[in-house]
Each structure stands twice: as C-alpha cells, then as structure tokens.
Image (cartoon, rainbow, N blue to C red; front, side, top):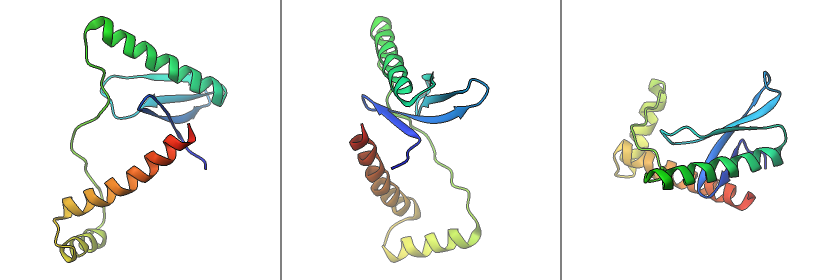
Length: 121
C-alpha cells in the first residue's frame, strides 16, 4: 500500500518531496510544536524521524514540559449545497445530529487507516 504518512512512537508525519533539496521532507501532524525532518531515502527518512522524536522527547523531559501528542480544535468542512443536504438527510435518518454522524464516520474510517499504518511499521 502506498502511503505518505510514517509513524513512530504514536507520532505520525506527512511526507512530501522537496525538489529544492532533492529529498523527502516530513512534518509531524497534529501538533503546535513543529517537528520536521529530511531524508533522501525512505530508510534515512525513518531514521531522521526517530531521531527527531527522541530529541523532542528529551527536550520535553529536560524542560519539564509535557510532550504534545494530540491536536485539539475546530474542524471546518467546505462543501457544496447538495453535499450538505445529503449529509443532513442521512444524519436525520440515523437519528443523529450532523456533527455526531460525521464524527462517527470519520472516527471509524480514521481508526482503520491508523491501524493499517501501524501494521506497516
């Protein structure tokens, strides 16, 4: 399976190719703190992620800070009117609010994807 996300110790990073550096660049997702790293090969990228996460955790311990793992905030969806109408009807048919229905679907699908990612490592 092709994936543009790699994982280490519960942290997940999105991979992009940076042509100016002729290397892969990755940034840990869902954090206010910025953890990013580069690698020219997949193996080097994995090694750099491990080093970056370990450095971050050591910094947190030395500074007495709690390592950040989760992101909190508001999620905004941009969609057309036909989509919004279908979602409203589908949620009502299930006896749920739009927010509860979308949360349920997104939770189920994101858990499947995260399980697949964990099985890849």
